[in-house]
Length: 502
Image 1 (cartoon, rainbow, N blue to C red):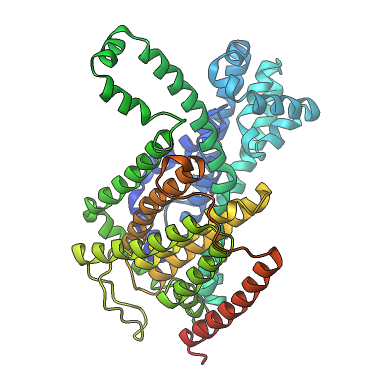
Image 2 (image 1 turned 180 degrees about the horizontal axis):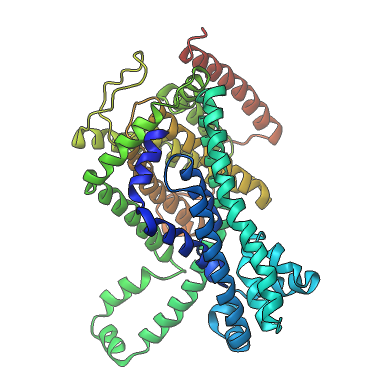
């Protein structure tokens, strides 16, 4: 951990420039709307944390944070008093009108005290002074209330980070490195959950809006005289190109988008290959940091997580999933599972042969893999299997809450498998990232094939509606229950052997 902090500290400026940076961060967070883009409070807490490790002086950090916060509140107040009505009708403010309305309600409910309370109320931090200016609050009343809040904020937030650093050191001394690893897993789970709950829906919404704009622009483009003449001159070429963006054809837009995402992930994979000079330094730093987090209980936990993507465990998982697909007459999905997992293993093997990257020195003498390091086969297989499993379960799970929970849990398992490989010293961090990118490329191709077939079965030369098995629901459930018990016993026996308990 100390090495990691030293690496962060070396990237930051020195002396007065460092305090000026803290002041600028506090200022930006206090300005209306700009504060939504700058996590000022978090960074000020981090500055207090670093002060406990020798970066900067705590009193100077508190003064810099106070000065920036006060100046930012004054700017927001002046913007509201001078240009409030005009700004409220501008495009950026219309997008966040709901936040401004919440600030107005908060201000109406608390009056002058809202300036004090709003300073400690997340997104409203920069909006309350703006609303105070819009409503014509007297400058003296505003200055009195905001001055007190900025003083307390400037002291409290750096102190929170400073005390947190002391607690962090006590945790290391009292409970060993297992607490740090547990905290890492908790942060990883929370970040993964926030991505699927908050960020991913926004990405989908923005994508829908962008798609509507692109559709309108495309229709306008097609209506140009030059484009019309081109389509008349080369009808076959034009028909082929147009079919690639048609929603009525199985080989149309869905296939084009699938290949586009595959190309994106493949591009990121090759970018990683061309950035080994930078990546190698990051790999070494993470390897050194993880070497300090070992604890007997954490070692077993990570060994267990890594074993979930070993070949015997994968065969058990895939066998159970394959049986479920066959019993439900999902023959094409079963074929994709076999081709996807088998072809994926060949892709990883080809990558290891081509790049032949040496592995880091394992932290445990009994773990001595013989294959090359790049890309990580465990990270690849974990992401590929949970991706296919999530797709297959989207149909049976009817409620979106169940689907979201399933996606969060499965993606977290894939992330923990990758973390375990780094923790055990079996892979560099970039090996894990490469494994995920390669799996995403292959998974996108497989899911595109499944989705195109599901939506447009009639265009492809395979039979649809074929049901070789005619079993009742009770029979299928009985078979799956027996197979599940057998798989659970086999998995438990294998994992206990891996942990040396058998």
